[in-house]
Length: 231
Image (cartoon, rainbow, N blue to C red):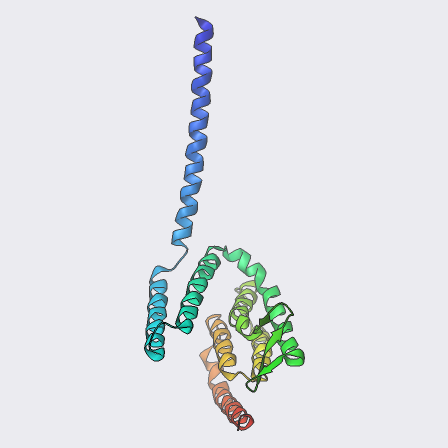
């Protein structure tokens, strides 16, 4: 009578262990699914989806139907959506570790474009890697704000004027290389993305007032210079 009782107790303990392990697995799976579906800022995603839908509607109206260009743009939107979703799942600490090498690689590729790039329609923006062609200026739209955010995070609480000057140099390097291609539109987008990181890092508006006229004159000069090139 004792042996059956012991065997029954062992089975109960084993079943209880399996149940707890199964419950723990389900809990981890639930947390993963919760993280997957809460990775997005849903109001921001809704705004992005509205802009995407508006863009496709305008494109459909412009081309008069759903030809290959419409299908290709729709495919690009879907690919971008999943790429954005994957990026949203990456922990910020990992992104911070990637910021410096991502920026350095981007600047090196921009230098590669300057010396070995392919010219198309009057602009040298593409770099042929043998397997494929890439446009490094596009990656700098992400690399520059990531790099500046990483830099200011390292100096958080002790940001000084020299830190803003160093950040300005980090922004000026890719901006200047992209302007030389020439691609003023992308250069201004990269500049804007980096500038707002610097501003929100604590740059005083008083320091901007004397610089703004010089910036406006400089951008105006660039626009005039580039317009002469394309005449």
